[in-house]
Amino acid sequence: MTLFRMNLYFLSVFHATAEVAFTEVLQSFVAGIRFDILIFGFLFIPLYFLLLIQAVSERWPRGMFVFYKTYFTVVWFLICAMSFVDFFYFARFGRRMRFEEYMSWSPQVFLEQAQALQPNQTWIFLVITVLLFSLGYMLIKSLKFGEWKDEYSPQRGTNVETVLRLVLPLLLIVLAARGTVEPHHLALEHSEVSSNKAINEMALNAVWCFDK
Image (cartoon, rainbow, N blue to C red; front, side, top):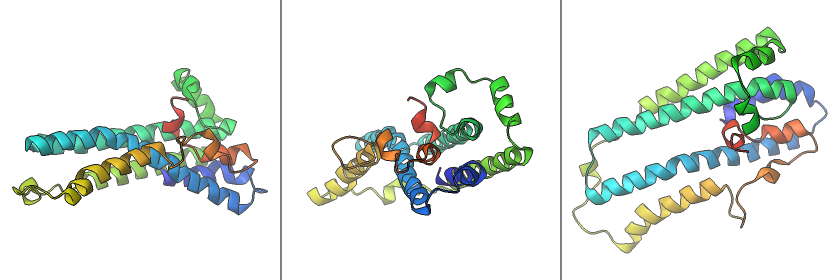
């Protein structure tokens, strides 16, 4: 997702924000990583509880390993598709698509936005999207789960081990989904690192903006 943001910057934002200080661009990328981690925090919540159920019931059917890989593949495909559609809207209006724009989106709208860009921009981002999806798919396909019995002990774990295996992962997932250790979860104001609107919007991602 950060690679998508990087390409968005060089293909669309860079030439329109030449006067913006590099430190603000860097801050936007750092804030963007926080928003990206937030998305994956939410995506790992159902997996955590599925794995917890499997651990308690001591049932590890091979079909679940296929399910996990399918889950990640579908999720990554949706992220790539939304990032691709969002790019053309961003290039034209200088901001991320929100829920209202997604609901009014159509192939005709997409063609109009694509035609407003230089042809090389469209082809470059299309190739980049295909490459990034392929990279993610290959990483998912290469996941090795191993034999669960090698990781499961008949001995009751200590309290420390219980915390490490159950509580700590949950805390990390919740922290990722909140995006911050502050009282309030990650919000739009955390992306406002510059006086330039395009730099601030770049820190967000298409998935986070979908329900805004």
